[in-house]
Amino acid sequence: MTKSMTEGSPVKLILQFSLPMLLGNILQQAYNMMDAAIVGRVLGADALAAVGASGSVQFLVLGFCIGTCTGFGIPMAKYFGAEQPDRLRSTVFHSYVLTGVFAVVLTVVTCLMCGNIMDIMKVSGTIYKDAYIYLFIIFTGIPFTLFYNLLAGMLRAIGDSKTPFIFLAVSAVLNIILDLTFIVIIPLGCAGAALATIIAQACSGIACFVFIQKKYSLLKLTKDICRFNAYALKELMIMGVPMGLQFSITAIGSMFMQSANNALEDVYVSAFAVTSKLKQLAMCPFEAIATGISVFSSQNLGAGSPDRVKKGIIRGTAINAVYGIIIGVVLIFGGRTLSMMFLDSSETAVLDACGEYMKCVGFFYWALGILFACRMSVQGIGYSDWAILSGVLEMFARIFVSRKFVPEYGFTAICYTDQAAWIVAALYCTVVCIVCVKKASEKNIIHEKVKL
Image (cartoon, rainbow, N blue to C red; front, side, top):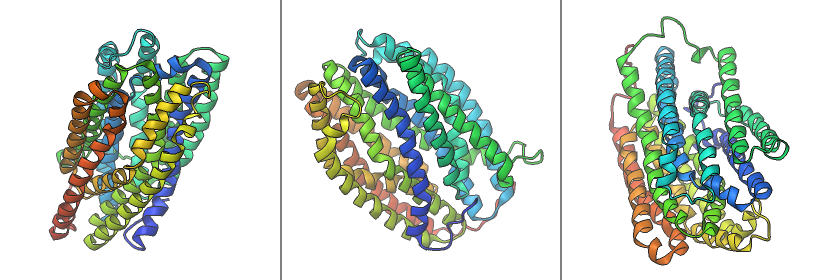
């Protein structure tokens, strides 16, 4: 069911929208966590290190896919809020075309480069083979990742965040079943974990597509809509590609960070894999609320309500900051215990490293909450290009700490690398968000109808 966010309490609307997406994000992380938990407990710490050894590269590529599809949803939300169905359908058509092109190019290029990626990431010989196989299979699933995230973005653009959650919940259960089948019953090792993930992702994407065709005539394509429109294509590229690049640029810094960590002992490689899963899980509310703010801002911008845009951003950012403080306390005191979801209690050295890392990042999660909210707000009101610089700042901060301090201070420096990136980028995004909201409020073209 479609949901307009142009009337009613901003906080209530953002939270109502964010809750299903939050549950969906948690389930999506459950995919990855289940992979790690089963791999770590059934196959051992070395196999877990193999699965996590290229995590930052996966984030670079898959993050581009997710970010681009999220960006495609911004003009859809704007035209939904402005009640321009023909323009919305044209945007949907061109998003399918662009997504298909990206799927082919990214899949071919990344699969061919898996060996080079292993060398760049300094993956050790003991885990090299399993790490390569896992990464290659994950990359073959790029079309499924793009397909699901594009369709989920369409549904969220028109206010339906519940349907993507439902299909993701089904695929999460399927992922768990396939994990157990391909690792425990059919001993495929790390390859089984990767196969389980991409099959589950494919199922969620197909389910979303069938649902859209049956339930949402607003998003269905007709012959008169399926024609080339330069403006629609340009708008999607302007909104989608910068968001995808922002994810990827951020991931480049993470690659340097992980590469520096991979050069340390295998204990720290395993610890990094575990803490990355916990860190991503703790970020789920940030992403859900920030996406809610973005859709709220896009719809109200299209409806010509800049004051509501401002209220939604301020209140949504406050919610993220408060959550950041709360989850930070949990990670500080419970990080080591939470790591035991993935490791046996006998892995004391790895668990101690996990506890040290989570304690350090916990003190700065509030900054990450502000960063997510402000960055997605800037993107939601149409300034994706401004948001890219936040990713650049994160990248340089991670590279600087990884190159300057990790060789001397080892894992201790790794524990503080993310925080340096978050604070620098959060300061930038806060200022930019204020400026962009002011610019959007001053524009007099919000109600302008653009002809197809």
